[in-house]
Length: 113
Ligand code: AMP
Ligand code: ZN
Image 1 (cartoon, rainbow, N blue to C red):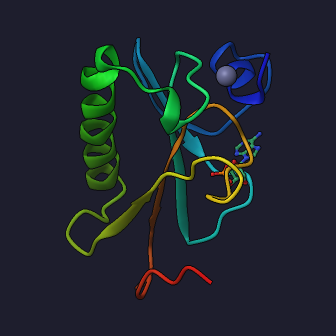
Image 2 (cartoon, rainbow, N blue to C red; image 1 turned 135 degrees about the horizontal axis):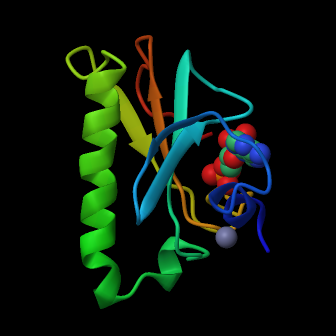
C-alpha cells in the first residue's frame, strides 16, 4: 500500500486539515512555503495520466476543497498556488495523485529550471 493510502487508512499520522468521504488534505511533512498542504483523493490514482472520465467530478471537488481550505487558513484573498507533478520529469515522488497548495508569502513567478 502506498504512503498516502496509509495516511488515508490512518496507519501513519498526518496533520489533517480536511477530510470527507472522497478527499483528504494534510500538511506536507517538508513544507516548501509557510503554508504547504497536500490534497489527495482517497482513491489510489497514481498520476494525472491515470485520470479517467469518471474522475471529473472528483477533480472538480478537489478544487472546491482547495478553495475552502484557502479561506479557512485566511490566504484566499492574498492568494495561493496549486501544483500537480506527473511522473519523473514532472518531479513526482509519491505515486498517489496529489495537489499541492502553497501559500503564506509572495510565491513569485513559476520557474522551471
Ligand atoms: P511530489 O514530489 O509532487 O510527489 O510531492 C510529494 C510530497 O509529499 C513532498 O512535498 C513530500 O514532502 C510530501 N510527503 C512525503 N511523505 C509525506 C508524509 N508522510 N506526510 C506528508 N507529506 C509527505
Ligand atoms: Zn495510494
